[in-house]
Length: 308
Image (cartoon, rainbow, N blue to C red; front, side):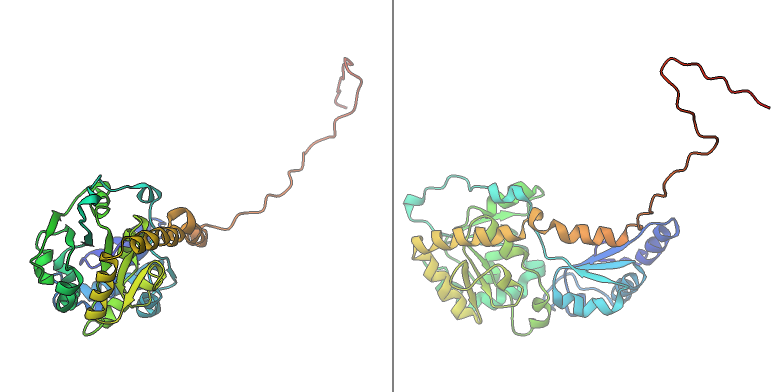
């Protein structure tokens, strides 16, 4: 059960358990400190339902160690399972784009309704970082406004098809993952590496805010760059915009790093959790044949058993 914030979440958990089902909750955000700019604010009642459901469930899965620190004490048992990527994503190649025109695309994917604080964090450096580039956003047509970007851009709305979504992301030459490390540091410290993993799996160098989970994917100076502030972030983007060889080299390294987080590479963690909920195998006792032992006779010989 993902993020059980509905009023009847606890009732559903207990109903499943009453018929012998095991229920596991999964959570990938710290809902106790959602940024104020996020339009999806949980109410106190929703937070109480969320925590009660975690307590009642048979287990909890989270995507980061920080989330385990936050919610693990509420759970009967908990596991950290990092976000993994489906194999087919690694095979996506971008729609043919005229690279000879000198257009470099800086990509961001998401929706401002939940990431306005992150886009606003990068706003002071956007003009410098995107200079000479085209901003390519996927998810919401209003994203450039939150970055304060008025230059060349291409915008794509939300896509219900994951394949189309990733193909649009693949149009970018550089992926960016700005995360507010000031007022919203607590929330973003618990944030997973998913967005960086998506761009890396598509073979793009990634520039991200320097936070623990992002460092799983972005090896500074090898698969992209990590930055501590908006101006440094912008300078790193600008460096990649102006150096096609660096983009190609880092993009290839990013893809290799992302392969460590493919579903086949990480499936063992899920198998471990399933085994934890599997009943122990019973040892088979040897079967003993009852009754009188059969007599050995030569082939073709009739045997007559008589009572008495």
